[in-house]
Structures are given as C-alpha cells and as structure tokens.
Length: 212
Image (cartoon, rainbow, N blue to C red):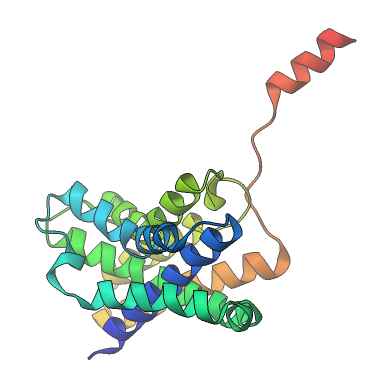
C-alpha cells in the first residue's frame, strides 16, 4: 500500500468518526450514526464520481471503505470519551485527509481531461462535500459556510499543485507540496481564528433603520 492510499484510508476513518460524533450530539440511534458516518466518509468522493460520470463510484469497488467507515462509527460509540480527548489528533488527521482527498479528486478529474479550474473544484468537492452532507442531514448550517477556512485551503492547494506542474517538477513533489499547503492553511486558520469576511446583513440593517 502506498502512502497516499494509507492517508486515504485514515482520512475515511477520521471522517466517519466526525460524522458519528455529530450524530451522537444529536442523539441519533446506531443506524442514524452509521448513516451520518458513511455519508461523511464517502459523500465527497461519491458526488465527485457522479459529476464525472464514473460508474460504479469508487467506494463500491472495494469493501475497504465500507469496513473502515463501520469501524470509525463503532470506535466512536464504544470509546467516545477517549475519542473526544483525542480531538487534536483527529483534527490533524482530518487536515491531512482533506489534503489527500483534494489531490485524489484532482487526479480523478484529470483522467477525464477536465480543465484545471474545474479539476481543482472536483478536488475541493471530494474533500468537503461529505461534511456538507453531514451537517445538512443533521439540520445544521454546513461548517464551511459559516466560520472555518476549509474549502479555501483545498482550492489554494489545488492551485499550487497546478502551478508546480507548469514548472515541470516531479509529480511526487507537486503532490506533497500541495498537501502541505492545504494542511498548513487549515491548521493556521484554526489556530489563529482566521476566517473569511462575512456577508453584510443588509436585511437586518434595513429593519433596524425602519424601526428607527
């Protein structure tokens, strides 16, 4: 197994735990936790493959993703206090996971001769769509839309990946540097509380003005 595949499996495991933790907060039953965990773990890759017309979708070609997702949910159920104490470690693997998933998504798009800007979008979707599906199913505004730099890190890494490609550097260098950029931006943003500017609430301002 190569390192990228290993990180892919680790990312899938951590994303499944992420989904299971949200399900636990919402007091879902075991079926609900498995559903949310599975949607979080493979949702991004599924949406990407559907958009690219890939049949069957990647995770259906190997039972590994299925077993890893179930393992992530069961670990969360059985050892939730320990999992919660390991949030920093999970965050690191989550950051690595989105870096790996972004590169995997770009590579998959390249197989279909997708233009670079759209390939970067496919990479971003692979990395973040699972979280969007998780939050939507749980009745929450998706995390990436409200406070954390998440998708932006994936886009930045994708741009760096293509930029290095034009420099004719070895493919391995492009991959590792792009992943490092994504992970670094993600960690930096969370550590220092950096977020994108919020949209102005024009409606609320108008209501306040009318009340005056």
